Length: 170
Image 1 (tube, rainbow, N blue to C red):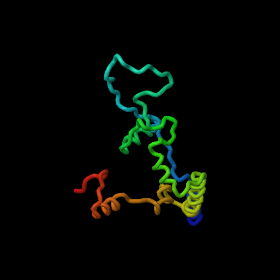
Image 2: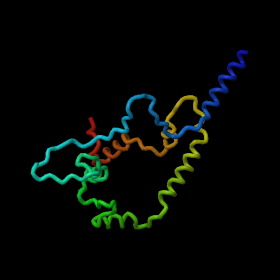
Image 3: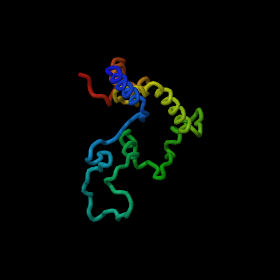
Image 4: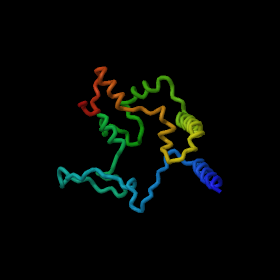
Protein backbone atom coordinates (compact mmCIF):
# COMPACT_ATOMS: atom_id res chain seq x y z
CA UNK A 1 0.00 0.00 0.00
CA UNK A 2 2.84 2.40 0.90
CA UNK A 3 4.56 1.75 -2.45
CA UNK A 4 1.34 2.51 -4.34
CA UNK A 5 1.02 5.87 -2.58
CA UNK A 6 4.63 6.82 -3.39
CA UNK A 7 4.13 5.80 -7.03
CA UNK A 8 0.90 7.80 -7.24
CA UNK A 9 2.58 10.93 -5.86
CA UNK A 10 5.58 10.44 -8.15
CA UNK A 11 3.35 9.99 -11.18
CA UNK A 12 1.32 13.09 -10.27
CA UNK A 13 4.45 15.23 -9.93
CA UNK A 14 5.78 13.84 -13.21
CA UNK A 15 2.59 14.65 -15.10
CA UNK A 16 2.43 18.17 -13.60
CA UNK A 17 6.02 18.81 -14.72
CA UNK A 18 5.15 18.04 -18.34
CA UNK A 19 2.67 20.87 -18.78
CA UNK A 20 3.31 23.15 -21.75
CA UNK A 21 3.63 26.67 -20.36
CA UNK A 22 4.68 29.78 -22.28
CA UNK A 23 8.08 31.34 -21.67
CA UNK A 24 6.66 34.14 -19.55
CA UNK A 25 3.58 33.26 -17.57
CA UNK A 26 2.30 36.75 -16.77
CA UNK A 27 -1.06 36.72 -15.08
CA UNK A 28 -2.55 38.73 -12.28
CA UNK A 29 -3.82 36.68 -9.38
CA UNK A 30 -5.44 39.63 -7.63
CA UNK A 31 -8.83 41.25 -8.02
CA UNK A 32 -7.31 44.75 -7.94
CA UNK A 33 -6.64 47.08 -10.87
CA UNK A 34 -4.10 46.15 -13.52
CA UNK A 35 -1.17 48.51 -13.11
CA UNK A 36 -0.14 48.02 -16.73
CA UNK A 37 -3.41 49.54 -17.94
CA UNK A 38 -2.61 52.88 -16.26
CA UNK A 39 -0.71 55.14 -18.63
CA UNK A 40 1.17 57.93 -16.91
CA UNK A 41 1.00 61.37 -18.44
CA UNK A 42 3.52 64.17 -18.49
CA UNK A 43 3.17 66.81 -15.78
CA UNK A 44 0.79 69.66 -16.46
CA UNK A 45 2.39 73.03 -17.19
CA UNK A 46 0.92 76.49 -17.44
CA UNK A 47 1.04 78.10 -20.89
CA UNK A 48 3.35 81.09 -21.42
CA UNK A 49 0.51 83.29 -22.64
CA UNK A 50 -3.14 82.54 -21.95
CA UNK A 51 -4.19 84.83 -24.81
CA UNK A 52 -2.42 82.68 -27.43
CA UNK A 53 -3.69 79.14 -26.85
CA UNK A 54 -3.83 76.48 -29.56
CA UNK A 55 -7.24 75.66 -30.98
CA UNK A 56 -8.79 72.49 -29.55
CA UNK A 57 -8.49 69.44 -31.78
CA UNK A 58 -11.27 66.92 -31.06
CA UNK A 59 -9.84 63.43 -31.19
CA UNK A 60 -6.33 64.85 -31.55
CA UNK A 61 -3.32 64.59 -29.32
CA UNK A 62 -2.95 66.23 -25.95
CA UNK A 63 0.16 68.09 -24.80
CA UNK A 64 0.53 65.77 -21.80
CA UNK A 65 0.06 62.52 -23.75
CA UNK A 66 3.00 60.16 -24.05
CA UNK A 67 5.01 60.28 -27.28
CA UNK A 68 7.57 57.47 -26.94
CA UNK A 69 9.29 58.15 -30.24
CA UNK A 70 9.89 61.85 -29.57
CA UNK A 71 10.83 61.12 -25.95
CA UNK A 72 13.44 58.58 -27.08
CA UNK A 73 14.89 61.00 -29.63
CA UNK A 74 15.13 63.71 -26.99
CA UNK A 75 16.70 61.35 -24.44
CA UNK A 76 19.36 60.37 -26.99
CA UNK A 77 20.22 64.02 -27.65
CA UNK A 78 18.24 64.53 -30.84
CA UNK A 79 15.60 67.06 -31.82
CA UNK A 80 12.05 65.71 -31.58
CA UNK A 81 10.90 68.54 -33.86
CA UNK A 82 12.92 66.96 -36.70
CA UNK A 83 10.82 63.77 -36.60
CA UNK A 84 8.80 63.02 -39.70
CA UNK A 85 5.11 62.95 -38.62
CA UNK A 86 4.41 60.14 -41.11
CA UNK A 87 6.98 57.91 -39.39
CA UNK A 88 9.46 58.03 -42.27
CA UNK A 89 13.16 58.72 -42.10
CA UNK A 90 14.09 62.42 -42.08
CA UNK A 91 16.27 63.59 -44.96
CA UNK A 92 18.98 64.61 -42.48
CA UNK A 93 19.38 60.93 -41.49
CA UNK A 94 19.73 59.68 -45.08
CA UNK A 95 23.52 59.26 -44.80
CA UNK A 96 23.16 57.32 -41.56
CA UNK A 97 20.59 54.95 -43.06
CA UNK A 98 22.71 54.48 -46.19
CA UNK A 99 25.76 53.64 -44.08
CA UNK A 100 23.84 51.21 -41.88
CA UNK A 101 22.39 49.40 -44.92
CA UNK A 102 25.56 49.44 -47.05
CA UNK A 103 25.77 45.63 -47.12
CA UNK A 104 22.15 45.25 -48.11
CA UNK A 105 18.95 44.77 -46.18
CA UNK A 106 16.96 41.58 -46.75
CA UNK A 107 13.26 42.34 -47.20
CA UNK A 108 12.13 39.54 -44.89
CA UNK A 109 14.40 40.22 -41.89
CA UNK A 110 11.60 40.21 -39.30
CA UNK A 111 10.07 36.99 -40.62
CA UNK A 112 13.45 35.27 -40.80
CA UNK A 113 14.38 36.30 -37.25
CA UNK A 114 10.99 35.19 -35.94
CA UNK A 115 11.45 31.76 -37.53
CA UNK A 116 14.99 31.41 -36.15
CA UNK A 117 13.81 32.44 -32.67
CA UNK A 118 10.90 29.99 -32.78
CA UNK A 119 13.30 27.19 -33.74
CA UNK A 120 15.72 28.23 -30.98
CA UNK A 121 12.94 28.23 -28.36
CA UNK A 122 11.75 24.85 -29.61
CA UNK A 123 15.25 23.40 -29.13
CA UNK A 124 15.54 24.99 -25.68
CA UNK A 125 12.12 23.70 -24.60
CA UNK A 126 12.92 20.03 -25.18
CA UNK A 127 14.02 19.41 -21.60
CA UNK A 128 12.77 22.53 -19.87
CA UNK A 129 9.26 21.11 -19.50
CA UNK A 130 10.34 18.77 -16.71
CA UNK A 131 10.43 21.06 -13.70
CA UNK A 132 9.17 20.33 -10.20
CA UNK A 133 8.90 24.00 -9.26
CA UNK A 134 7.84 27.09 -11.24
CA UNK A 135 10.79 28.82 -12.92
CA UNK A 136 11.21 31.70 -15.36
CA UNK A 137 11.45 29.76 -18.60
CA UNK A 138 12.37 32.89 -20.59
CA UNK A 139 15.51 33.49 -18.52
CA UNK A 140 16.31 29.81 -18.77
CA UNK A 141 16.03 29.72 -22.56
CA UNK A 142 18.08 32.86 -23.17
CA UNK A 143 20.59 32.53 -20.30
CA UNK A 144 23.59 32.08 -22.62
CA UNK A 145 22.66 35.20 -24.60
CA UNK A 146 22.22 37.52 -21.62
CA UNK A 147 24.83 40.02 -20.50
CA UNK A 148 25.53 40.89 -16.90
CA UNK A 149 26.02 44.68 -17.11
CA UNK A 150 28.06 45.12 -13.95
CA UNK A 151 31.20 43.17 -14.95
CA UNK A 152 31.06 44.74 -18.43
CA UNK A 153 30.82 48.18 -16.86
CA UNK A 154 33.82 47.46 -14.62
CA UNK A 155 35.81 46.22 -17.61
CA UNK A 156 35.14 49.49 -19.44
CA UNK A 157 36.08 51.54 -16.38
CA UNK A 158 39.35 49.65 -15.87
CA UNK A 159 40.26 50.21 -19.52
CA UNK A 160 39.83 53.98 -19.05
CA UNK A 161 36.72 54.38 -21.18
CA UNK A 162 34.00 56.73 -19.99
CA UNK A 163 30.78 55.29 -18.64
CA UNK A 164 28.68 58.43 -18.23
CA UNK A 165 25.33 56.71 -17.71
CA UNK A 166 26.55 54.38 -14.99
CA UNK A 167 26.55 55.43 -11.36
CA UNK A 168 29.91 56.50 -9.96
CA UNK A 169 31.99 53.80 -8.38
CA UNK A 170 32.58 53.97 -4.63
